[in-house]
Every structure is written in C-alpha cells, then in structure tokens.
Amino acid sequence: MTSTATGSADRTPAGAAARRPARLTALLRRSRRTVPARPVPGSALAEVTDLHVRLGEREVLAGIGLSARAGEVLALVGPNGAGKSTLLAALAADLPAASGTVRIDGRPVGDWSAPELALRRSVLPQSAALSFPFPVRDVVRMGRAPWAGTPLAGQDEEAVAAAMAATEVTRFAERPFSALSGGERARVALARVLAQRAPLLLLDEPTAALDLRHQELVLRICRERAAAGDAVVVVLHDLGLAAAYADRAAVLHEGRIAAVGPPSEVFGAGLLSRVYRQPVEVFPHPRTGAPLVVPLRDGPDGSRCGVRNANGDLTFP
Image 1 (cartoon, rainbow, N blue to C red):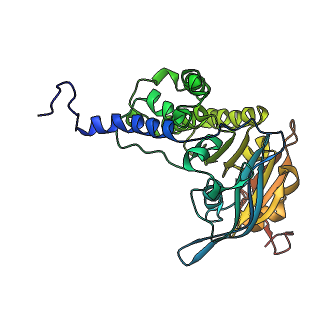
Image 2: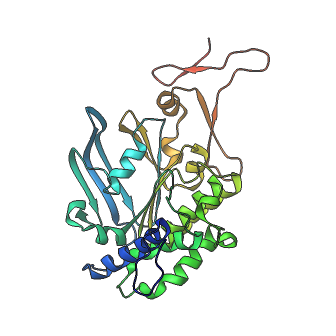
Image 3: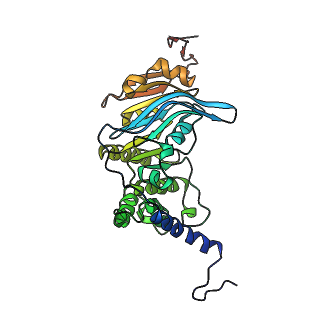
C-alpha cells in the first residue's frame, strides 16, 4: 500500500509522473541562462552551412545551405525520404551533423546549453506521445518550463491560456491527453510549442492529422507568428498550403536542395514533376495568384495524362 503520511514519497507511476515537471522546473531555475532579445527583422535565427548528416552508413543530407529568418515562414517540401524531417532535426540541434555548421541565434549550436536552446527554439515533432494521462492544460504548461526562474516566468498563465485559445483546445483543457483524438493531440502539441514563446518555431508536419479547417488554422498561426517577428520553419506535404502561406519554400530532393525561394518562383511544373516523379500542372489561383499544383490524371474517356521528360517538358504517350 502506498503511504500517504506527511513527508513520505508517492512511488506510484502517477506520483512519479507528477514529479517530473517539477524536477525539470527546479533544474532550469538553477541553470544560468540569458533571456534572448527579440530578433531583428530579417536576421537569421537558424542557419546551416554545407550541412552533411549521416544516419548509419547512409548520407541523408549533403551540402545543405539554408537560413530561417525572423519575420518569415519557410516551408520545407519534397517527397517522402527527401530529408525534410532530418533537416528540421538538424536545425533544432536534435541531430548531429557529420560535417558543416549549424547556428542558432548567431552561435554554433554546440555553444548553447540545452536550457539556453530551449529559450531560443521550440520544436514540434511529427507525433506526440505521453506515457501518463496528463490533463491538456498541464501538457501545454510544459512549454513554459524553460522560463522558470527568469524575469518572464510571470507570463506563464497568460501564455498557456493564449496558446490554448489560438489552437482551439481550451474547451477540453481538463481532459487527459491520452483521451484525445489524433487531431486534438496535434493541436495540443502545437499549443505547447506556442506557449514556449521561443522566437524560432520548428514544426514537423503540423497539419498531417488535421481536418481542412484546422489545417488552415495552423498555417494562419504560422503567419501570425512570423508577422510578430518570429521565424517559422514548417515541414509540409501539401504544396497548396506551402504556396498560400510560406514566404519561401525549400524543395528537397534526394538529400539536397533542388530549389529555394518564393513559392511563385520555385513551384514550377517541370521541377515538381521531376522531384515528385509525378506529372503536375501549376497555375495561379484565380483570386490570390498563389500557385496551385494539380497532378495530371488520366481522363474519364481513357485518355492518358501527359508525362514530363528529363527536361521538364510535357509529352503525351
């Protein structure tokens, strides 16, 4: 039987889970950290130069050079296995480089301690899993742990409330995280990242589990954070979302950057058809002018769709 006497430790799994956030907060309070200043518009908050990353014997990224700037949304797009998530993990300093340089806030990532990094960048992984049934509000509050013991710790409750409101999770704030649907969990995980209020947001497929309304909501949040001066790097499979909301897009192909720039400039039919190995058409949205990328499909009468040759020219069988 678990003792409940004063001063005794609750050694149940629930008790251990409850102690973990408190221990993390205490550790961060004791660490020496410099609260970052707000970034200068257009400054590089994350930058990689000649980046090479290996996973086992395989080189996953080769010669990558890219920066994420304050005030912009940068979309990483490309087919499965192109290296998008690996690049995001390298930018986050969660994956070591075999060679090359990764800088965050102007310094090599190795020069920052983990608590200092947590004040400068927040990371949303592809999937969010928790071993214990924390209430939603507590999961979001975990994003505030890096600020414990700093002059901005007093903003915790306001930051948590604002993040939950922005992601539309306030109404189930007291529900256990484990009882949520996949889409609801994804929004709670994003709320945790927003509550952290780091100036660099690194988001790995934040729309993958979401319905149409909430996909648009997430990308509007990205634009809002960029308008407020943050740098947002987001991995996306939906080229329409990337074209509508990103300031720049980096198209990855076989571990290298095939093109980078405004979507209106880099989302060409030839390049995308080659990179994705799928013939596509690209035409401007009739109202916004943003590129719309549409796969070429066989017609209902059995006519075959066109294919792109090595030069990106459209041909028909």
